[in-house]
Image (cartoon, rainbow, N blue to C red):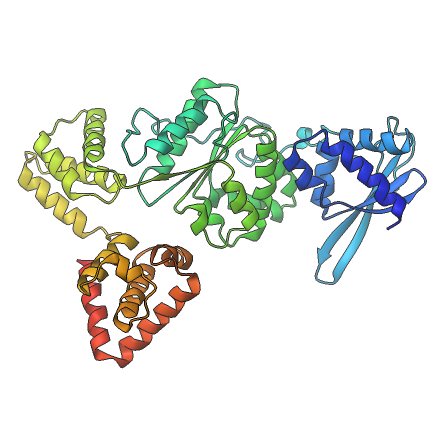
Length: 475
């Protein structure tokens, strides 16, 4: 690299940095390296062809202004594209002409005017051959704020969702990440936000899609060599709702393309809404650069609803279905089904169905029968806090002692058993388990699980501990 190339490019960067958002500057210009300067022709190295295409589509005018300022009206720019393959690194050269007049021929004919992609845009949601670029929102109008009842367990998430719906892209809640366990209303709330936005802003393009469907579309675009069309389609969305983003775990290609789509939408003031069964800190096999962006906005947790909220949910469900049930029965169901909203509503539907099909009056006895069967057939979700409580009580110690730094053998074993059962009965990551049980790291949890497995085979008394606790936790 010649000194003059570096000097010219640095001056260009100073100009560019003053004219775009700092995050866009860091994402698209900091990775570029100046290669050489020959007369009025500057060569720069970019990481990939996609990178080059992005610059040509989104920043060609800015590059033209910067280079013209430094090298005059006849300035030319050559991209040196670094491509990775199994045979090592290769460089490809592509010339761009950011001068006011395109009087000089390109060394390679790659013409990318600012609007060239829109005419060829392919919508992954329409049937091939049908020329229709209208985007169906994929929203379910039955999932709205009217039937997403507020309670202590969801107040933050619901309030943030309403704020986003009233001003998409214009709040600090961007992205809005909604997380929580199964059946607590993540998908319902995500749809409700989208439905409300469509009512408030009919002209905005809103799209709901599951992370699994998004991945399938991406894989299909790679097979058909339409990856850029896929990216450009999603760049047009005003409000993008991605459900169950944890599904992207371990899928590096899909994560990479989502990273670029996310950057474009965020930089252009578009709204991104994400749901997950875990908080960002507990997501595994998701790239750090994505996790850091998930944390830019607000992460709002949906928790298990309290008794009063469960009663309100049931009464709202019955009202919407035009069914009347005595309050004593509603309260019985709400008191005995605590796990999540989905199971709560499922139980009341089962109760109504039993009454209707068997032509029986809805009584407390019938409610007990339905609830007992429902609870029995539903796998119980055990929390890490509950596991620590059961283990502590079993060994007759308090939770602070269980979590302490002491190395006394019986306390260490109790702590290891709590970690073992947390791994067995919850979906929490090793890091999350360690953090909640005495602020240990994931390696400590892994060691604890191996120790419990080994002692279960070699120590009869320890095996009894495992069997007793397992029985208590599965009752």
